[in-house]
Length: 260
View (cartoon, rainbow, N blue to C red):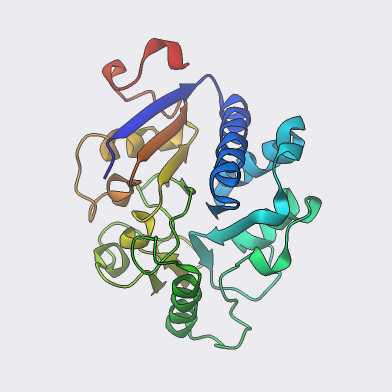
């Protein structure tokens, strides 16, 4: 796994715009190299802020949206179209305004879908969908995502992997149902750390004073069970994208002065 790199921007707006520009470049490069790109989206204010910035970026037209596969790192297990679902928010922020191939957009199952209120069965179905999309060149039963985006919670959770809960301890399954999450709603679906680590690049997004302690803990060598963000690593690159308030507790040795 790659060692974390830290990039700090002046504020959350600049962070979102810079991350959007960086993501466009990665998608275009992947499409040029392999014909298509695979991205894993994240929810929350920073994930949605990035998507909104991407929607407004003039360079977004450089992306061939019809050759982009979109997956999700986690989902709130709620009915389809619920405003709290990550895919609902992503569609409003960006997806409904670009010419995606609907067959290449892979939302996690909803609570009113074919698996009813069984989050574990829904998780198994998403794992099967990922496995079906994985090729012989991929590392394990998920595609080699080009970029996997993660928001970082104030408690260091990423996706819906919360400190000390069973999901963060999973070593074999790629997707799990999450029960009793400390953040509502309590029932969720999440990729696991093995699935996250199959990505070529993992980008962790954190902005605001309330994320400063989490960033400091996760980047200080904490264990992944106690600080799930510490275990989120990409195969070739792990990038922490922060604003100055979120980086306030980090030693300056972790990031170059010019990165601001």
